[in-house]
Amino acid sequence: YIYTADPLQRTAPWLENLEGGLDHLKQVVIDDKLGLAEELEQRMEYVIDTYKCEWKEVVDNPKLRARFSQFANTTDKDQGMSDQSVRGQSYPVPWPETGPWEAEVSKDTSTDVKQWQWTDVGTVDDFPLNGGAAVKVGDTQLAVFRVSKGDEGDRWFATQNMCPHKRAFVLSRGLIGEHQGEPKVACPFHKKTFSLETGACLSGDPYKIAAFDVKIDGGRVSLHLPPTQELDKALATSRWRVTGGESNPQSGGGSPKILDTFGEDGGKCGTQQQQEGACGGKLNW
Image (cartoon, rainbow, N blue to C red; front, side, top):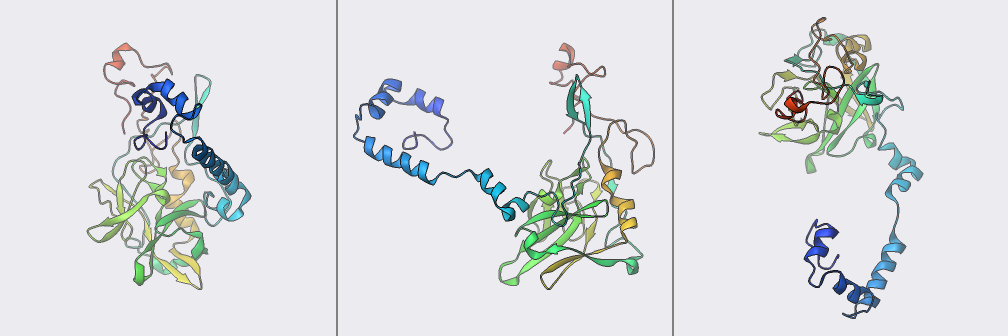
């Protein structure tokens, strides 16, 4: 199979297209029709001798295990969204519809920056090169990015971790790139892109996320942040986490429309809805 299959071809279609089919395969493997048995045995021994379970390696290695922590600066864990019960089974609360969104606190828009302080969030090695990691300050999730510029050294950026499109706390796992020379991050869910320097949305959507300055001193990473109480008032996870039957936390009232994949009675979509799509046109990406 390894010798003759096309790239990414599954074994079933490979066998269907193999000249001679299963009978030919038996002759090659069992009867050594092509004189490859010894070489195949050696290759199989190599696979067995060099095999290692990547997950076991992570479990046994504290440094590798640390890469799978939710936050780089604490062992705390936050649930990004709530669950609900649908027909006796746990199901994530569907994303709400959202409108224009702009962070209430950011380095370029906040007026009382004299009250801001540098907050240590870890070592340089805690953050992957050309990637990001989440940190937790108070009840707020922030995303810290480390971008390599070759001989110029690394550039560092910090933003909120929540993408305002569907209020998902995922920007630290986003895709790093550039837009006309401006560093950007793309949300891993729906590819909404944001400037790492200003927080402005670069994909034409009415969003603007919070951005913060970063400094490196003695191998430590610090963020220039407002007092924790002020930061939490604007960006706390408990404020923005998607919950069922919620009120819009930005407007201060009213219930946003929850986009559910089930009917109002919790049952499955009916025949008429199937004409509009699997979920009656309710699922909005």
